[in-house]
Length: 273
Image 1 (cartoon, rainbow, N blue to C red):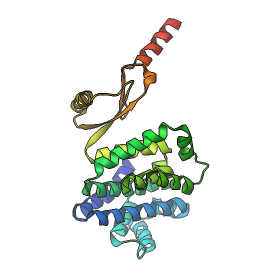
Image 2: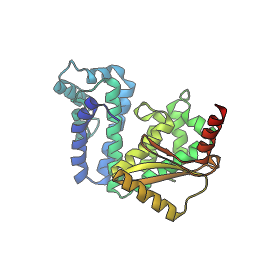
Image 3: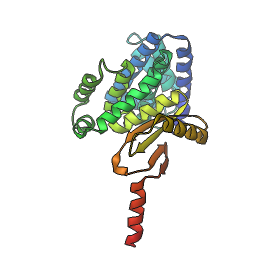
Image 4: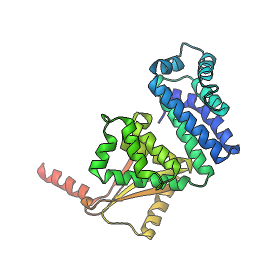
């Protein structure tokens, strides 16, 4: 979640992106997304530039003019305008500006997927990829190892997903390797799944069960959660026999733990007193 100051700074650029996405085609939105993420890469590599663009002592117009002078001729006019709008806002610090630039690129990627009718597929592919990674300790270690160059880990993700997932899914997974929003790889993937769901006006419910749910059980659970939260809910179900029975459901910060393993742990604690 963005702090209030950063959220306000982000709002003008986000509105501008929404206006552009409403009339542009998939290729146009995708190109802008790629260019914005390239700008985020530039900011990541150039801390002095990042500090200058987030300096509250410099007027927003001056900061906007600075980034425009750097980008003009290197990226499209739409991208220049979007990043200039982003930079002109008041940010809490250089890191927040970098996070905001990455977020704008992600929102553009999701807008392109939405326009192309692929947003639900992207959401599911990201979640399935996160399950594959978490289920393979060696793979999880390789992708989450911050001592390994990002380029090497990005190449591994590309080898795993290219030709097997949507281009947007691949781009987002590559961003997760770099640490989207300063997060680790797993947290980055989870956050990207949430953003994809939010783009469809849905919440994400991470469900852990001891055995697979039937289609009817998934439908009933999704309907109950939708009623509870007042919006559609995407179920992301993980089967883990270690919980023995029952179910664990997490929606954002809300955790509902009705697993047998939890009840046994509580009973063990109570008996030990």
